[in-house]
Image (cartoon, rainbow, N blue to C red):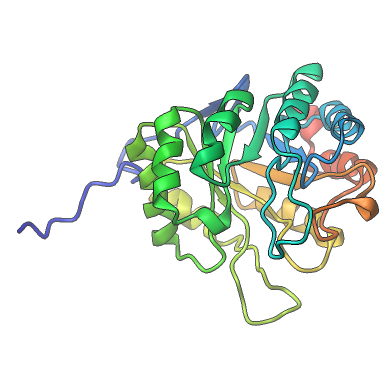
Length: 270
């Protein structure tokens, strides 16, 4: 029996540049630093439309929101499901932004893939290998979030399942590892960005919102992510975060998002 290590599709070989992932008209990995933004979940037509208009106006690149919601409690907001998919699709079309949402399971995958441009596999599903392969088989761009206890090698091997399923358009998202200090857990591992970029040709974006500390910590981490060379950013944005049905208080107001985009210099790059 051969003990030779498999050749990984995600491995960065000599002379191989970063893969450019096309999400509608947006490119992730080409140096443009797209910002993927939106509420934690679609809650109503007025909410997602208000968010979409503000995000597009401020220079955001992709409209993102969960449509099927899986929380730590089975009694919390579960999302609007198929209705949310339609609301997200229409809101994105109205402001000319491609859309993204999380895929929770294989039964809903086909419906989700029909309505959005970027499929997200959340941290809790990072090693759901059946789902990962099915996402790859759709051929659509996919974003794989790092699990809270996953090593970099485990994360990259999970991405292999999507790549092996047939999709070459994969984005990695660093979004926090479980630590020991309750004041900083989950800790967004900024240092992982350049490390992963040395190992793989897949673009790497950062989601600073899981970190404990509320919305106040999102902007500093977002700025740090850009400074270390991340290929893009995810920012949670809600028209009225205090009344949100999901998100645990880690969402920026529309005004705070506009300020962050200015601090990042995003409008001047568009």
